Length: 119
Image 1 (cartoon, rainbow, N blue to C red):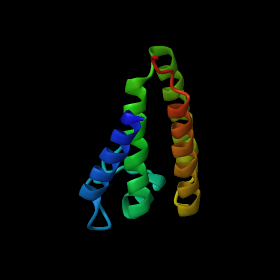
Image 2 (image 1 turned 45 degrees about the vertical axis):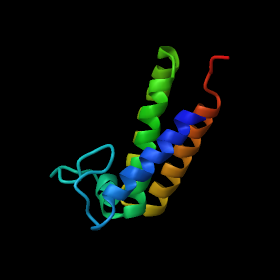
Image 3 (image 1 turned 180 degrees about the horizontal axis):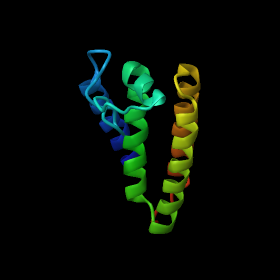
Image 4 (image 1 turned 90 degrees about the vertical axis):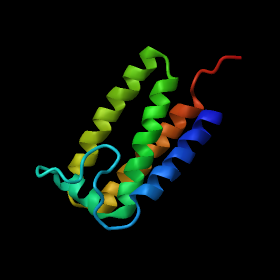
């Protein structure tokens, strides 16, 4: 539980640094200033709640993968790649992107709950 609390604290901290203008320099998982942004990435950069969700998702994902055994880490990374394809399919649809982030954060929360912990 301590590690997940750290993830939430870091997410909150990162969210604070990203607040302000509608267009930030970077979301957690990509650079918003790139010239070749995909449609979903543009919307994420322009929508603070989606940008914050991206920060939370990638921070949680990174912390979670560092806590997992190698075999489970690969599975989580494969799931992340599949999720990114689903997110990209949303294009400019804000509601679709919100639902995608909600779904992924729920999956990561479940992965944390099912983490093997030493006695």
